[in-house]
Image 1 (tube, helix red, strand yellow):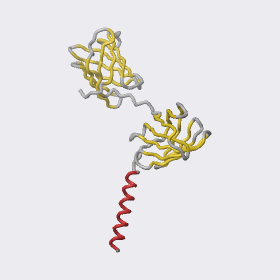
Image 2 (tube, helix red, strand yellow; image 1 turned 180 degrees about the horizontal axis):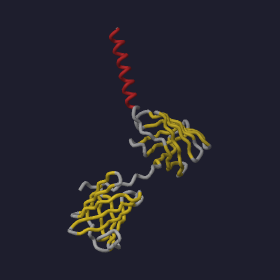
Image 3 (cartoon, one colour; image 1 turned 180 degrees about the vertical axis):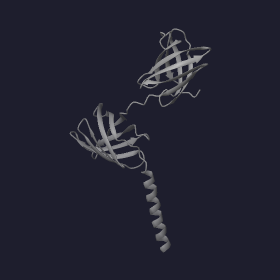
Length: 226
């Protein structure tokens, strides 16, 4: 009997540890969200502010609803809501990175009344020149057309475009100014990044930086590992 009790205690301890492990790392969903809802009541868009403390979630919506819930595993939240339109339940599923939610909702004591998807408002990605870029000409000689590979260390940027090497640095948060050498020639290259951090526009010239530009290019971040 003693061994049976010890086994039972050990089994309960193991089950508790497994449950704790399952709840050990839910994503952090604290932040502001855009929620798109559809269902019996039609379609609507609202903004929701969520706060997470451990596995507990609280929130408020622009339509006056309040939320309270709990992560029951790494991705699922069981929650309740109440507001001007009544009160009810929510079953929410979070993506591993905590940037998207989806689920269903209903009134208390009733089946699902609709579904929703939500996306977190995220700050823009920091601009980086590092990576591979597909460069095309946009006017003038096409000296830099093709694949350009860049590395970045702090503000310093080094790029290779075929036989041309560019050495430069960020002169502004979104702009790189560089000197290039290749094929027995030298010149300057200036390019600035668009808000998506996946494309840039640039101009280049030969000789000193004071010379006028003779060509224009656009670059698109390459998703391949060439």
